Length: 309
Image 1: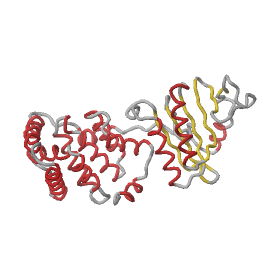
Image 2 (image 1 turned 45 degrees about the vertical axis):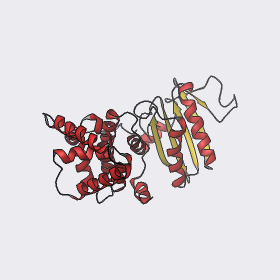
Image 3 (image 1 turned 30 degrees about the vertical axis):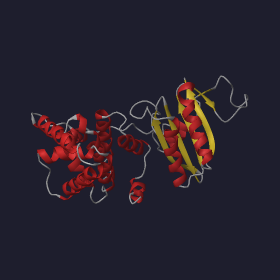
Image 4 (image 1 turned 180 degrees about the vertical axis):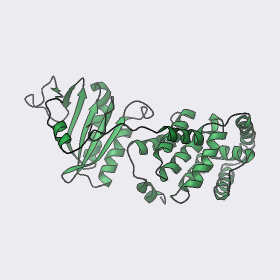
């Protein structure tokens, strides 16, 4: 595992997808943190769906943590894989330096007390050294990248943010009296105009856009308009809203910023924007979906292929 995913998360799940004679992809997800509220079945579908889409025929599941914590996730993965016709090569649990198999019931092979993970007695490290293979190092974000992300997402100082917030509250009271269809039509028009305009919106327009994005149908139309070509504009526009709007209105533009950054291959900004959205609105569904796509390594091409749908 250290040569495939680095230090495995604990508690967490690693899923290796096999294609041909080797590992085709490795999916790694912690069970705590931003995605801890998702059910086992919600966590199981993305890696299995991606494995099927890529033509992988088998999965090796390795869970790290106490049995009561990880077993529901292993069960969900195994059930989902079998429903999709994917072979389970093996499913293991690693706890306290020992491992157990979920698929083997033979006490001679897999004793009830578990099997010691004997790193020192394994030929794998020596073989890796001979081949010049090193364990995967945990990702480290350079200071310059952190400064760049903060500049794109950190709230503006001074009275400006409060003024935008007041304007947003006043506009929200006005649009509340409109019909559903009128709100969606006006919001969609405002979003399209802002995306096509040059420069960044002023205080009043920033406030109005923030309120419009609070309507899910308007937000989704903005979401579907983000393509590889339009991503830079959307990143700058929605990032501007993130910096100027109060927390009540930040989740939607932050999630849109994440999608735009992901389209550009900027995973550092994308994940930071997801965290910003979830900090403003824990459980915000679009941010949760985007976070799952990033955590499981969903290829951006797969999103582009489905945007017409």
